[in-house]
Length: 212
View 1 (cartoon, rainbow, N blue to C red):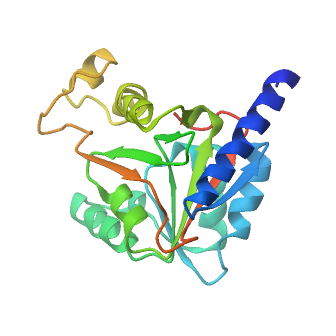
View 2 (cartoon, rainbow, N blue to C red):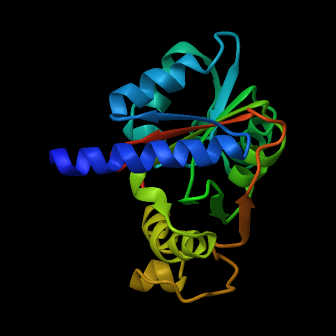
């Protein structure tokens, strides 16, 4: 990484960590994905059952592979039928630790996430007592309004490509059409403006791009 970019990311990331702490999140700055992986694993007790939502950021730092090897996990991708997948997703709401990314974060420390099924935002809000959020520096924007714009017009169209042909505008064209179709993946929009109870949500800000 260019030294000037690295320095900028560090300054912006540390400022974001301070803003998150004011809102009662536990927050950490890690300059690299390797450091972020070590930090994340240090926050998961060995006796915890672990699950996750769709989380490219956590996959990119190697966290999902690591927990599969070292923890009891609830993995919806092991399901042999849609019914079993749905059951595992519900079980994940009561995992001890839940891992996720965030679609965007404002400079003043508010997380913004938009889901299709709502399982990811549900787990962030209530259920698991330990939530770990992997947040690449590319997710940081100026305001909450900017965060919603990023979630809907950047993250969602990319996610739509992962899910195959949904028939939604973002799936067909790669751009948001503000749709309300049956297969819309922007159904549940949540701002996490304060962490309650304090420290339940741990946000690891990575000084590199992670996820989308």
